Length: 401
Ligand SMILES: Cc1cc2nc3c(=O)[nH]c(=O)nc-3n(C[C@H](O)[C@H](O)[C@H](O)COP(=O)(O)OP(=O)(O)OC[C@H]3O[C@@H](n4cnc5c(N)ncnc54)[C@H](O)[C@@H]3O)c2cc1C
Image 1: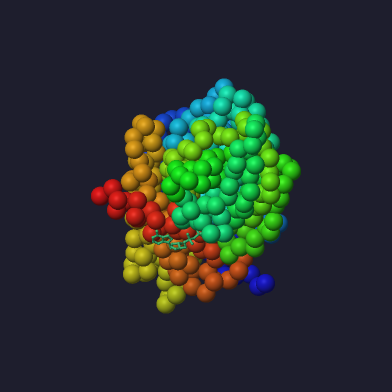
Image 2 (image 1 turned 120 degrees about the horizontal axis):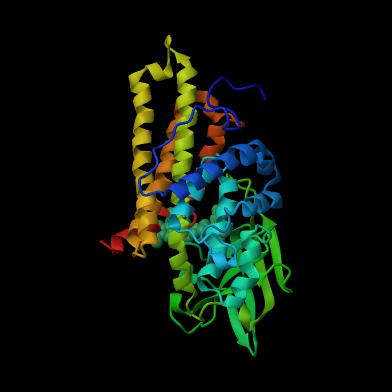
């Protein structure tokens, strides 16, 4: 492929003139340092290698282990089980800084592990489950996946059909899951299954911890995807998978409630990733506009053109303020379903608008495979669908108005 024209087109981010939002006042000094460390790690350890991971279709175990060693994978989890004991603000920073790496699939694999799957064990696990799974998960030695979606139940979580039947001291699981991040290479699978078929919709669902290699548990296709190519996404099959009773997570029948409560954190992190991607997309476009000439001036010297980027920056700053306000509400133990649903819908729609606008400002260059903006534009597309589609989020808002 010919080299594309100059500007914000590189595969990496290292040499960019930084565009970033000022640090919110509510972020503590400790977390500011955490942000700096993650940013350094992203620029030095992720960006230079991520193109190879994109081609391989997954991130290496070494990346989990390196982040684990630095304590970033367990920031939310209890100190006594190897975590950092930090709050939602730490998760927001982790998501935002990973979003700035420009590889959505890398950010997805890591945050599904740290903030969307293992969190179920941290929140609801027995002391024995926490002891067994959390320390190696925080160290990045075991990788987590969360398995809710099925071929016929996505947005409608309560419609899931995978069945778990009690048989003496064991549970027997039958069914299948699809679109599972870290599904192909994971180790610990948090699986939602129906334990009471008589109970209405959401009431008869429970969560189980299934280890890779459990007899009857098989991994199907690894999907080729429009974006998020550095994350592995798979379908999973459960054929008479027999689990000891202690693999039930939390209380029987409470799975739907657990999924919904962990969703608040998951959606916060998805929104934080979105604002990180907005900032990086704007930064790349700013650099491009400052060098790209049209009609005898740089694009940046033409107010009508640069106002477009300023408008995207203004909206991104608003979304970012929502991220930190929601993180603060979660840390204060407030009910955040309405606010987090607003945030998830707004930030994930916005990042698509921002990247679409940034690609437009790159002209034809932005359409060329191998440019960062082209990849980012594909990566953000899933964010209005996964983890609660925009329409479903807005319905959660409407119900609370
Ligand atoms: C790359 C990728 C990674 C994923 N990772 C995971 C994972 O790790 N774990 C997991 O469990 N799942 C995962 N998913 C699944 C994801 O969460 C679902 O795709 C998502 O919840 C939407 O479900 P669906 O695809 O079945 O769409 P459907 O539920 O069939 O909905 C299709 C569309 O219809 C619209 N819609 C649906 N319901 C409503 C409604 N009530 N009101 C208005 N409009 C509506 C929305 O526009 C929606 O996008 C992943 C998906 C992808 C593509």
